[in-house]
Image (cartoon, rainbow, N blue to C red):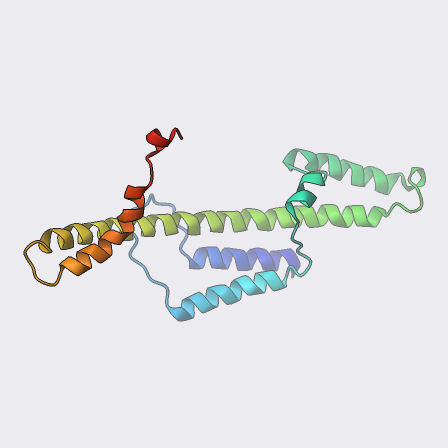
Length: 179
């Protein structure tokens, strides 16, 4: 079960949200409350399969020796060397722990790749659908603002919608502030 089970869950969630190889067009979709609950439950299942996850402080992250992609071969070769040459290592050195840490790092890397792909796609979709909603809302605002000059009862609505832009007008522009 293990890592394959987690990869299958991540792939299921990824496919459920709609993997797309086409370029962005227009998003015409919805998620029901039941869909959202199922997605959250799937994510909770993933999290429950990773009970050993930790949260590091910025300081802890800064102080740690890092293992990146280029270091995987080094760690693999070190683990093999340790297994083959136990007699040169102190008796307190735990070779099995090194091997287990390496194997877990490989497995977590695989899961992280899938999760990053899913996160990137959800983030891109959120940006796209947010852009669609904002563009449509700006059109509505323009029509309400124009109509409020001749249609009774729309002035208050136009002012309410215009509140979104008051904070922007009050801020110095990037050029003026030297940013």
